[in-house]
Length: 347
Image 1 (tube, one colour):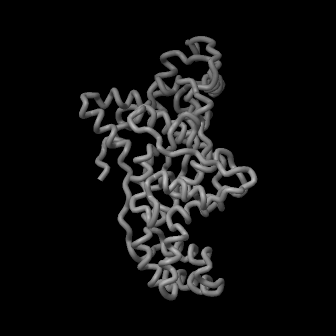
Image 2 (cartoon, rainbow, N blue to C red):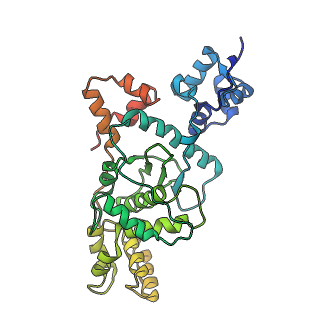
Image 3 (spheres, helix red, strand yellow):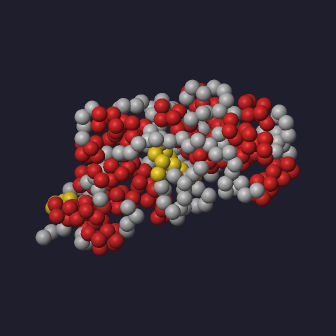
């Protein structure tokens, strides 16, 4: 029996993306499926179309529908992935995350379709950096309907603007968050489920900065995203007033944490950036935070912000009479994985 049905030079198909998203090399997939590595390489490039028998083997190993594996890749929709993590990712991990997001965009498109319009606009920084990340942050706050004070529920505000936020495990690398916003698609943010609520909010604001300001990588992108996030969550005009009401101490910052819904460490850094404390006082308070063990677990536990947009839309479609099989097909998932990911309460 031939390994493929016919020559079909249509360009790259999603087979390779799904393989990488599952964390498999071509050699590993060839061994698990019985389809030779040479044929897999040609099939992923769209040079051959696999016969039904070989395709069925790949569907079984990759746990993905045949309609996805044979889907031509829309190269314009392949996302550049921005991620927030403490250190550089290995190339293999970065490729897996990129593949997961490429697949996730198909899931989102299949579920959300045109139900929610994107109310967020791109605002790339000009090459001369004449406009600052802080100015962009203030404009984005205004577009989300937040003019003064803290953003009370950042996840809800972004979902109302058509941004899809998904919270799940991002693997053993403990990545805080990732974002991508390909042209003609909506922004999608993945949040690691290990993040405490205060760090989650800063990570989400950091990824929002990438989505809005950055379309291609740059040397300054991480610093710019942090500046955006600080102004977005703790606007200078408002938080400076709170910081000036008395001496900046760990207890005073803990009280402000409840209001601004960010970590004590983030508030301390903001106080230093705004010249509300001296360099020496900043170093001293950082030492106090470390000695108290607050680098790993801080006092004042914030209420978690739980994404609900995808699950609400799935529930709506089910209530309108669509079957799980129908929605899973639209999302390019098999029914079991679709149910595991999206048939749960958002509470």
